[in-house]
Image (cartoon, rainbow, N blue to C red):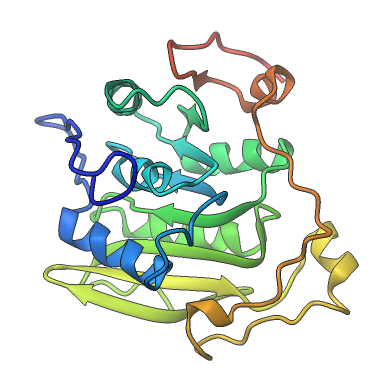
Length: 249
């Protein structure tokens, strides 16, 4: 961990698996950009960590005060590793661990009414199609609000794209062989967003700093997947202590 409550605490990885944890240096750069010098900038935020791998980015967010992190990871071994890393730090709440393919997981989050502040995605670098599919799905998803930020980690030599529907890239950072692309919505197409579109000050891609995002739509109700009924909607999840039973919607 780079900073926050769990600063300097180690996380485990798995040998021989197609898991490439975000490097400490790149993770530090990511959170320096998001915090912009304010150590309390992420207090109370809601994250989705897609293709979560070891869970390093989502756990870093929890360390810095995020209220809720939803880890989505299809591999059972990787999901168990995230659970182990959370347990090693004594984290018992403030997260959900969803063992599903990302596309299915996002649909479950939509059904549960989850709306997040940040979405981080880091598919295996060889799965270039996963970037396009995931960003396209997010572009029309109600899990985003007017002020949400989507961050994609990718190989420096690969460009995931500038625009996906309402999502537009406003910043790209390169570091070593890796890069981070930052996206944000420039309009709403969800039911909640359309309701407040007339009064929302939507951000135009590339203008200003991260702090000059659109005015938060505080009228939009955010429901987190903390209740047992929401968990049943999620499908196969992992709690902070043990695997949950498969539930059918």
